[in-house]
Image (cartoon, one colour):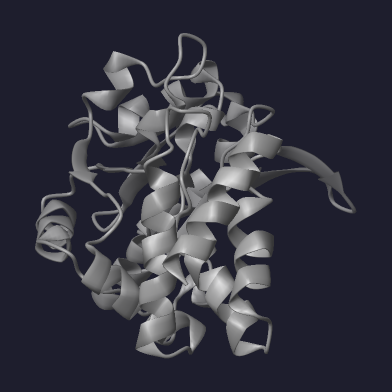
Length: 266
């Protein structure tokens, strides 16, 4: 059996529950239900999966999806080595065989002809056909597919097929309430609560500009980055520019509006 120690999370990743998402995920895992995590970038979806893998004591195999990813990147391929041509399992196949959680991060970035490979794993068959190897792998009882999905990226060319969506139970994520978000930022960045509250107020201002030139407002992840800079001795105005303003827009007017929002919150 393959050693999955490298995929096990040894210490608890900090995650602050917002609603009943932990109980929902535990019930889905017990039922062997595939899970879709829907929410904006940087709101805690990946941290939640890491926390749940630790909580359930399961290995977590993460795949960062991208448009050049092929089905072979997921399931495996024959490769040449000193012994000749040898089959090497891909991350999905490894998870299927060994009973790990396979997390496909930002699955909408992958091509649709690649994501259909999970269809036979996300219904009652729970099998993975390896056509090149002429083998059908039956999923380990503990195997689970989890995908993350940002509805804000929906477009005609970049969206999940309905036949894929309807195979999953979905848990909706959003940015936490201001009190909880300030608690998270203070804890993760190592800053005082008052500074964290200021960063959250700035983020709320930026999120109000979504659809008015900004595709996304400042995420919780961005707030933590700004907080880390403050903890390292950078002035809060400069930290916000580096972590929250410059990364999300190149538009001078929007940058001025965000800079004004920072000044108004200080």
